[in-house]
Length: 502
Ligand code: ADP
Image (cartoon, rainbow, N blue to C red):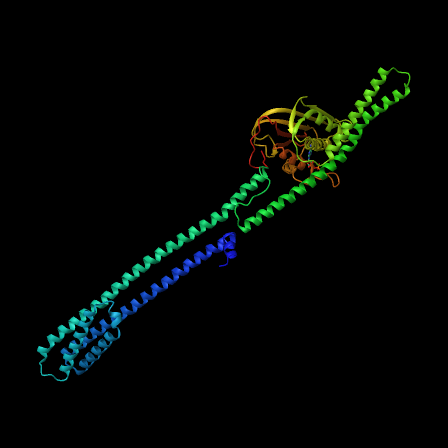
């Protein structure tokens, strides 16, 4: 077998399975050849047994006609007797080799000698010998008896031998069947270890990927099929990653649109403050004292810095950045985000914050802002006049998943988390769609009003932070979204499953 063919057999699942089948086929072939040989031997034994029986029957015929002759003295019986003696002699000659297996040479020679003697005496008597029947008959009878005894012994021995051969044949058959079954079980086990083993390793790796503990699959064996599945899977992961980034980008762009009027409003304040300060300075040129002028100039500087911060925050939000955690002061981030989505706030809606001033969370600020933009925008969209949104946050020790429908790798964790709640008193979410709202492209809004990516992106970001997001809602009474992010002080234990409902 050429070297590459051997490698193909060793390094491919198909090759290993084929090898297994070949091994079983060869074993079956060897067993079949062996049994055909054994059957031939058995067949020869049966034929020999038949011949030994024929000889015995012929000898009985000899004796039958001998007895008839001595009873009725009819010449025809004597003739038949002679014919059967000849037949028996021919049988002995023709089967000399075969009969040597059921009688010793000496015994065969004795049988032949007895037959010859018997024939001689009978033919002498038939030729009209002088001997009277009374003195001739006992000798012939005892000769005949001896012949019958030897022929009977031979036939009986052959029958016993056939029985022994049959018994050992069936034992052998049973043994071979058991061995074949064992061989098939062993080959099956070896195959399943080599095929199922790598598949189980792959399953564990896929679970690890889904819980962000791994980024790609590594080959658990060097079988061609496994390697090509791993390559295809890793290609698919890369492709998914690219597509997810592009989804995130489109969602971010959509959010930017939402934020535009809020940002314009936010910028308007410092700009009008700068403008007012400039006007006052212009009017008072040469009149006011330098100390007052410095106050106005400091205000202009302060407001310019404020405007610059707003523009920088917007730029940071719009720019695509690699995931990077830092300690984020929560309250200013949420306040700024509320300001950015202000354009969406109906004049009579109220957004209330209950966030400790010094509460920080280890997170990517840009992504966290995206989470707040999406949640606040969703809450605002359903609110009527007088509607309220309460955003609160607190450090909390948790054990076990939160109430409601919960998703994310940190849902089953135990430890200290920062829990952020966004509660609105809007229309709420119907029970039947609750489990689907985090699915990509799920929306209940009219075409052109929602892409259905907002909550999907929120889930992705929370999951990226090893956190957990849950939702509870009673239709007509609003909705509560709760986010748990590891506080970084004691890390929650991660659950194995990514998505769960409680
Ligand atoms: P979109 O806002 O583009 O529809 P989302 O993924 O943000 O996509 O939201 C999916 C769906 O979840 C919404 O269409 C809406 O039906 C429901 N939803 C989300 N947040 C709220 C909320 N605060 N109140 C009521 N329904 C909500």
